[in-house]
Length: 144
Image 1 (cartoon, rainbow, N blue to C red):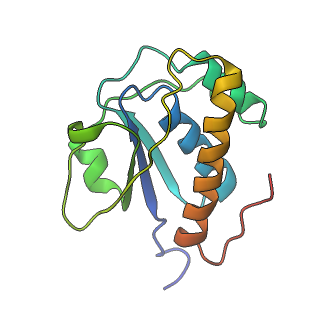
Image 2 (image 1 turned 60 degrees about the vertical axis):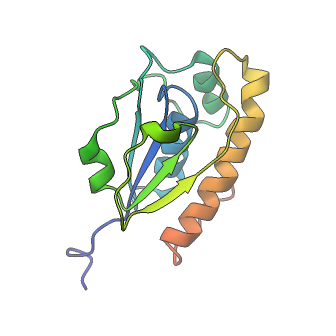
């Protein structure tokens, strides 16, 4: 298989509001995988905007998510993903046999200040590094 025909793995991050956890996860995967993974995020009940504390916490990492907008979860997005990572959306997330699903139990950053969001952000970064190692075994995410 040549690089032209090789398909990137795709990951969909889903949380209820698509305003915190899933936005941070998508941003980390995009940043750390350096474009080698197709990344999407969505919510079953998307908020109007991304959580300001999540924006600030990611800015501390040198990643700007201030222009991101919460998106509605669609059946097509789930069908198109190789890996679906859910973060507290429960039964509202569609399920398709044959997909790889992971449920990351993470505290919801909604209504919390940046100090409370940092540990959530750091846990997401750790899980993203593990996911990259599984999806791209030849790749080594940077130490950041």
